[in-house]
Image (cartoon, rainbow, N blue to C red):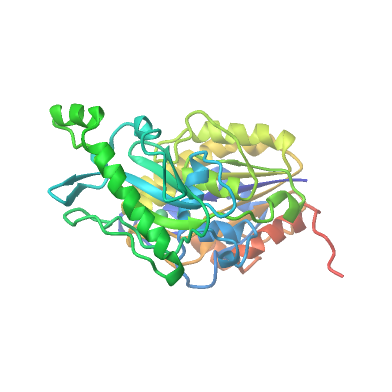
Length: 402
Ligand code: ZN
Ligand code: ZN
């Protein structure tokens, strides 16, 4: 049997005033997910441990079976770098980069007016300092990744990003004695970048048009890349990922999971969900395990837009109906954490979860939603690290423990 894991990012929620006390999933009309819940078995998911509030990446590590995530997690920098297609080598230190605008020593725009592309700066900002190679790769809009390659590098350094405007950029500081040299060369690199960007023709042109110049790079999320056991080795499954967001593609590549390119998949509020589920249906012909990631519910949660979250879940449900004709499959639908609209942030509340398969032991859950999954969910509460085990079990692929 094939397996399909659908992660609706930030799915879980709390009672929303605008929805008369229901959650977006409860209020949404989702006939297909209700069918899967009714014909399957449901429960509640604690992505890491009961009550812990995860960011998306550690939660995904747990759900994809790389638990405890601390043992495998390389930090955000390498994952984002892999997400934009960088090739990393063992020991590389990687950062997330924002091109920003600095004026009189103060960061006035952390995104340089959301500049369309920073591709033109790639080659100029790829250099060598004190025996270390610096490679800059452009991402979407103002985003990029920086990779440092060389001997004795440490990822234990602070961000240069002040994380808000109105402050000067920070110096990179060593967070441990062995990171002294890395911090030093990073500060040299930042100065080099500032000098290079200052009078660049793109920036002069932007200033002429009254646009904020991209005259500063802000570094954050340092991490060191190392190879981990691939998903294929770990679970004996040929796997692929369908996602719009760079981080999720990066997580997939980190585990050696193929990333399927889908036109119209954005990782934003508006994305071509239909195209994603059609691609999933196709991928199931040649892959054992397909992971679909949808970012939109989390983004509506952060905006506190309960009505928007409800509508997007309805849109997703419609697109998911493409799976109705797929046979011989185990489907799991859940989220990586809750992003309650009243909170506008992630919370430690459990997330509704369903497993559908023709062979599954059914419970009495009448529809997919927080209350129903809590009340009727035959699986009770499970943790992120149980998801892969359950998928293997239901698909008849679990190995007997002796
Ligand atoms: Zn998330
Ligand atoms: Zn979020």
